Length: 152
Image (cartoon, rainbow, N blue to C red):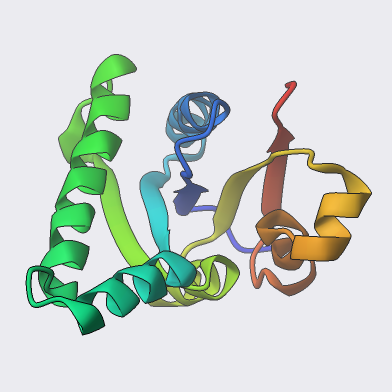
């Protein structure tokens, strides 16, 4: 088993996100590991912006995505600030795509050793209809995965 040197936290800004980040920050000194916060701008949101941009010149897809990315990086910084974590010791990343695919790509690109993410507990019915990023990650994650439920 390889030592855990880089921890990635999938942050979706749900209620549990703050607790996930706190957990990673508490765990990292014990493992002497870096922490990286990652948020994925969902591909379906990008497609919605693209459709609007196709019918009006008032919206530029690249500008909208970059503005959203900057806002989200600020929001990740705000989480760190609220937890009194120095932002310079934690990597903050915003990527785009299908969430589970983008997370797997980030794991490979950043050489991550452990992924921490929450589950929303939508139940079997919602999972059957829409799928679940956490469920897909359980099956496809190339590194150990620590999941925490919303009621944790």
